[in-house]
Image (tube, rainbow, N blue to C red; front, side, top):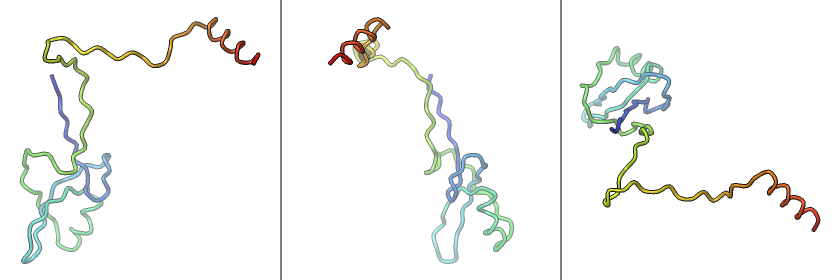
Length: 108
């Protein structure tokens, strides 16, 4: 089971600790622009134009949506087996083996 979480962040400050609301701004004789803005970054715009209405809620993720790491799941390959984990590159040693290596390198 894959779980996808979409986080909407402000397009200006990109802070995730502030809730962002999607606004569609249309200048005269211009094309509409959709922006996700937090309360701090929308304040200057609202000061000029008065209270703004939120854009229609759409289910498509924002262009600035940050991907969240998915839960780890075992994926099967075409042959039906689970891929093996590659071998560790760091050798496993006992304390005695490490001490022998140290003693051998310090004598040189």
